[in-house]
Image (cartoon, rainbow, N blue to C red; front, side, top):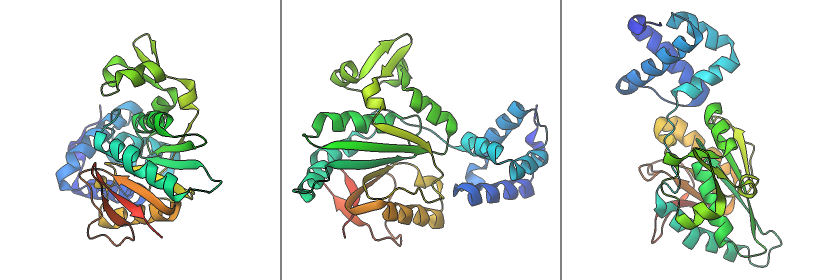
Length: 273
């Protein structure tokens, strides 16, 4: 079993520097124990007993580096998490986008769920849009995460009985099939979502997005990395589009062009040019 008693301050500095350079995720003295715990688990899985040996491995092996970054991320999510955001999407954002596009032949809404974890967020968005979009409007959702393990769960669309808390009964009956041990998302909803690996430190290549959800992700970044992520969102979004971040996150004091929007239901940000 790997022993992290020899995880020195110098080792910690090496790891935190590499993690920051590769993902933008910041580890400090206050959350060092989280890194140590995840690292110990990874070394045990790989049968490696030295943090120095493992550091050499992830410095050379890009696939193992991806697996390591996967292991250190925190993936807490649920269906309809922070209901106020979905109320704002339904009652403010979608009506605004439809009004802005009145008379335009473009009737497709493009949404990005960035940091989608195990898929609950993009599936929630898809179910909601399925309910509220009038014809001929349609939608496309891209959902991304740095965790390949989470993306596999999301693509499968299966959720144990304990994971479906928060889904309205009508949605559960309409958009899920009861299977052994849990529920499976209907294929027509799954077909509306493209799941993809993406590291937010890099440009996604996505453009002309109408809505971006990136909730409870940038809290793991420092100020410089946060600004980089937010400005890359700006580049990926269409004019008069909307950004949702976590309720405990803020763009206040950040060098960004987004406008703050306070609705009756929730606060969000708008690219208004």
